[in-house]
Length: 252
Length: 358
Image (spheres, each protein chain N blue to C red):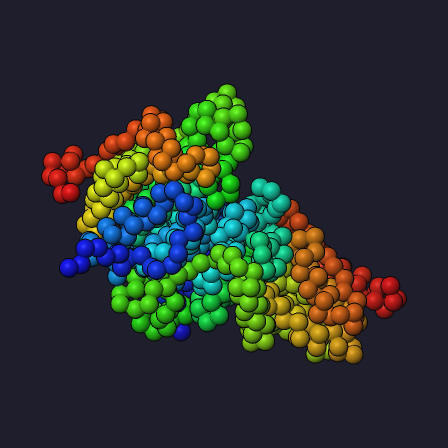
């Protein structure tokens, strides 16, 4: 009897992520969702610059690697030309919410019909722990070593809330990877977003809270607790837009 | 075939559309606004894609995505906007994504002015963005050429998997001239791109990428690009020679200025001075051999390079001439275009200096 099988949407490449990082979990639930919806053959993914830069080695589909922050523009080019394909964008907080903010907001405002997976770990991981646009107030980073001071560094940006001010987005949800229950909920949200995309409904955006034990200088379990107790205070979980509900017909 | 009167920017669009361009991404900037305007009307009629991007940066990255998915894609801008595109151009060059970028040059640096200029020659021909790369760069000198070269740019770019640029100036972009339009190419006639990321559909998956983090992987990739550029230099360098067979003074220029130089050469001949012209059609690859051949002609006393810049192409002219003959330079900037009379005077001065051995 087959008890478990790794999704075919992930390659056998060794992932480079640090121990305790939850990027790998998000890769898996995203890959499983694509496979379960039968979208893997017509899927095109966009990798960002940041910790997930090597995502093109891990997802077993056609992939393009974008310049820093430009993934939504790249995805726009693909999806507009090939509207029947499934296009997903995988970006971290520096990529999406800092250098790529213009591309993010405008793709959402145009209602581009692809799915954005936004990995929020409140830090620049790949470059060694600098302050991100999502770094919490008081949280230490290598470029704010005494902790983020709003008087100097301003406040973290809540992307789901910001995008929810726009008319076009179809589905916006923030989920977390703090424990199994939340991981399962995250998968459900991702699958729902991809399904909406496959039905041509509109722009879908899932923000996933992820831990960074390395740059948070915490043990993995402690980092998950920090995510659950601290990150969710600034970044509350929930659905910020679901037009399928507004339309009065739940398709999920 | 009959000719129709076309605006330079419209000619660029028709050249693209008639050779299978089905995705255009642009952002408003003078003096090329008629390109996105024309494309916004024509693309939907042809089942193609038009998006007015939020920035030049986004526009070139939309080209990356669309062209990477196998569609013939183009973006257009003018000097400051093309500077913004340089990041994306470096990425398409490294990932070997064929596409066409149009630069209708205006005066710089900075925000500069909106009148014609040629100050982006270095940027266009020497790379422009970061890293070792080149584009195939065609410089039209008439509205007909703006159409034809844009048409040809798509084939050249696909053939070598090297992005191509149309380097026009504001004068060519804003001129109206009679044009014989090339025939419409059927999309089925364009070779399929096996490397394109358009969904694997049972085949081996494809990746388009410009990150090659291992030095021993990146170096061979850069060397392969360089080998392609050598092929392009060997096969694709083009220029036009005008009355150089017996010329003592050879004027050289590209784009708008080349037209004025031809008139100046005729004017000089009316005054009994044997003048000719040579103009590059491709500014990358620069037609080095043709320049060397002209300079080697015994009766040629000097060359005069004329540009709408402080002297950029003149460096390639001097490299090609390699000291065989003196190369003089005359340039105007700020959006000013030299008159025929100015060039005639400069040519006489150059010839006199050359004869005195200065």
